[in-house]
Length: 96
Length: 486
Image (cartoon, rainbow over all chains, first blue to last red; front, side, top):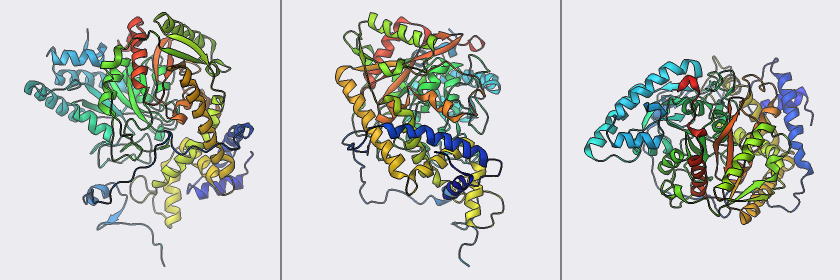
């Protein structure tokens, strides 16, 4: 699989990553190599095989009871936020 | 014997006998870290005050008669585990100023066991790497040769234990990140069964593969720590609700009659000659100790690396979407709009390898490619897991190399991701199948350590540890310390 600059720009946009002009050719090259490498899998016969859903056979995601277990600790959590006002996270204006 | 030359078990015995106090021991370790860390770069944060407070509390518990087996034993946590009130960077610029608001379950449990926290160890950024060179805070150096890598991603924990700055440290293993560095620095490391140890508060990379474990000098020390870490946790939805065996009590299970499978695929091309010879010699020694050696095959195993490099990046791209520059982590200066905030915060906050994996994952999950890559890889995972299952119908354990070569030079593989990824060719299989596995030192090539890998069936940690312990009773590789740190 050989990706183009345009492909990598598209992937970077989907991933919400700014990639600089200087980085772009490096990712075009390395991502193309990685995809070619993983394409070895095409040779494997996997027709009717069930895809793995959990590393331990028979285990399923547990659900917890619908009960309040957390206390309000927003001040502690928001101490790590880049920008807050009152108890709100501040981002650039989204709605005009 | 100087304090740092002692194992966890020996330190625990010394503390119990009141030969030295936990405060004396903590001071000794802190002094060694202060002297050695500028060269090794193994610790990102040293928690000296916390260590002395923990140690004083441990001595108090000792005096009050409430001490447990690990009370007063110093440890370090990989900087991927959230530690309440202590910076938790995950080796990334993204979390340079992140002070965790809660403790990971592993941190809570080891603290409750009375251990003394010395600090947080360096690692590949978000645990993505096999050499500790992707850390935003610079590479860790191998205590055996400072021009060589210590392996990764738990490279800081590995180097700190190998240089005897701390007797044991936590690590995480998504594709070999405990076992490969343990092998490259000559210590023991165990990755338990998926679900054995809680992932709560452990910053997620690939959630279906990530598992916490221990790096320490010996299998006995791994058993001591693992017993305190393992067990059900309602805060981790994939934590398994099953009793935890007494790993220490089961260490002395005899090796006689244990069937050890030698995986044909592990001795194929790519394995360096001298490394392979040492691993074969250690397997021959297991036979002398009474194990029955059987050749087995897992035909799909050679495809484990390409399978992993679809599954792990896919999960990484999803997990790391939480770093948005809004709630925590790095934010770019003067964002023009929300899209610009997301893109520049992430573009600046993540390093090159993390961005490469996020983009690989984004691509393989994108519309039109999902079936060809992700679904195909998850089918391969089923085939690889089935291979292991048939192998474990014939044998109790599998043995082989941990890494294809001893430690390589810093900078030697950074420009070629595929060559770097192939370091994990022998370790990734256990993660894809959720199996417990460990690495123990089995010799030296050119002054650099080599690891023997043992893999067990699900929840087979006791037998893994007992086999490794039997081997370590007859060998002294795990007791060797680099001359500069003796």
